[in-house]
Image (cartoon, rainbow, N blue to C red):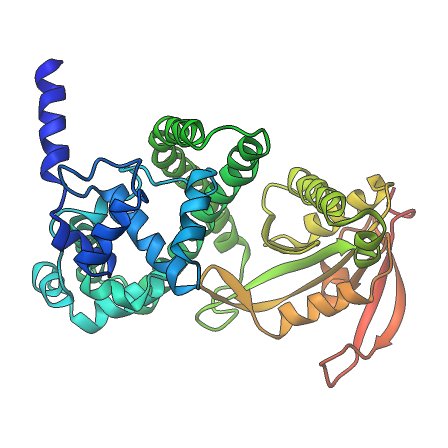
Length: 406
């Protein structure tokens, strides 16, 4: 155990940088970096033996604060009060170690430089990342190169990578914000010292960080199994050649809370957000297995399903069980849509959104294609030809008679 600890300590020292290189990584002069050290802005970090990942990340944050007009005095005060908490080495290990340029990565991975630039843009990394890549970045591009060599279509690869980038970015953003709101802020309000705040934040990082990757990997595999199963069923039930390449036929539902804007004025943003959270949770927990929430926009949820019949049954049941105000309103349509970057686009999506906007509180409005696919146990009241905003031709709408269906 002692030998392992000694080896770990030696590796930690070897991963630290000299002041000149650390200043270059942070984007400031060496004299500026030294002045910041003298002012005590890096009191948490042992920079005497070199600059580690967390210290370099801290320096980069200071650069951004200075660019936004904050004075050194304001930054020092924030650090002393615990409002600025440093980074953990485990989070920013890529700040140190060997760095690679775009040409070097292209040579090692055999990917063309322009392809690497496309992938970086698709992931969502800043353009400057092309000249500051670490060993783990190189390994990631090797995986991409394998996908290209195996014949995976370039457009499909870029879309997949774009979805990964957006999803992981959202996860990371949520992790940081939730820790800030539910851990960091309460400690500040309780008057906990900056040193104790830093210690507790470090402990949280050390305990939670090892859990993230295994959980994400497990959920990825579990959802993959689910959607492979759905894809197999979809292939059996759909007509081959029924749509263009890149298009799928799905049922689309939009659901939101009628009068939500007024509600925020009456009860305040915090309580209104809690009502939306419960609404989205209720939708998610009650959906049939083949349906899923694609995204949420404020109080609105977009739901997609390959099975229109089960989706409309869900909508009727959901409205029947909804008794608390504000009541939901739901609109459903079926059609061929473009699948791109993990999302659905096109006229039919816009139509479904407009149908929902015409529904009143507690109502389920649908189009004729939905009526055709619904079960015989449901009854529909024809509203008539309605001119929906943004559409040249009127759309025939039907109100689901939930009483007749229960």
